[in-house]
Picture 1: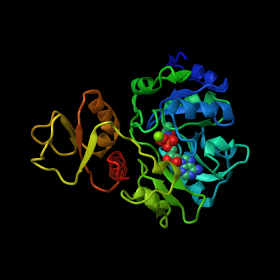
Picture 2: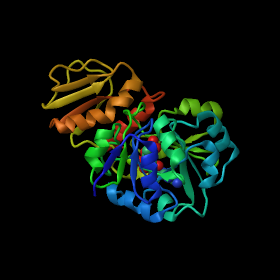
Picture 3: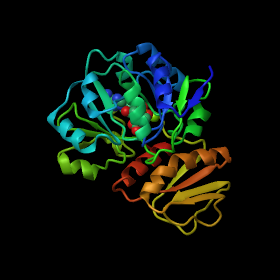
Picture 4: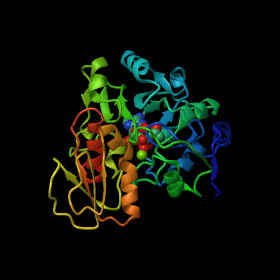
Length: 316
Ligand code: TXA
Ligand code: MG
């Protein structure tokens, strides 16, 4: 299959409406979309990514008003979260409408819904007839793509169309909150922090899948995720001397230790989140064997960075 690369959201949407898969930019990571009401089209996503069929997809809507097309029920808490955080990097798990094909939710009675704030994503979604089911646009098990070239590298030849945009501004996948249970539960950390969620929902619970090292509770959390080929070593505090085994790389907020073959010192946690997955990929391309990663403070987006690092190290 030839993959058409385009800058035009309208053209990309026309492929989607014809039952094909389309990769598109969002503010978190790039997604691989299909018409959420076309089970055959959605099956193409699982095939292109090599994704296990028991891992449900997030459905993307152009505006918060369209959540009702896929969700049967929107609780009072969910409404508050929508009001405050949509459009943006937050996914809500809600009771699913029966009309949404089972393949999207992997047989679950619930559905993840998100409304991206990225202008190109919004325009694309407005042109699409239906809401768009989309996981991250990577081959399963690899780090999520944050720029279009990486999507092309992973999925070129396996998808019909790639809508090209700027690199993703956040760089980590959306925060997921399950609002189908009471109290609501945080299933995945992201740019919408637990601190800001607690301002609105003080009794929100943190699922064990969000606590690195504990057993997974939500379907997608049980798979090895976000992983580069290189071995990941987590470093709790900045260290002057690490017993580096070259070729080794360093990423973190502190200055790199002496002897690192490749390194990236981030100015703040937002930058750390934005560049992390791209750094993993660049390390693999350069044959780095070990990547030393500084664990940032466990607050704000630092919590999401720690979660992805733990998963990449095989401990999440
Ligand atoms: O930022 C994002 O969320 C990106 C962009 C493209 O929107 N998407 C993304 O999708 O990260 P994906 O498939 O890579 O991760 C979706 C996660 C999986 O861990 C899946 O198990 C979980 O969401 N999920 C989806 N529906 C769910 C449901 N009904 N209940 C619990 N977890 C659900
Ligand atoms: Mg993914």
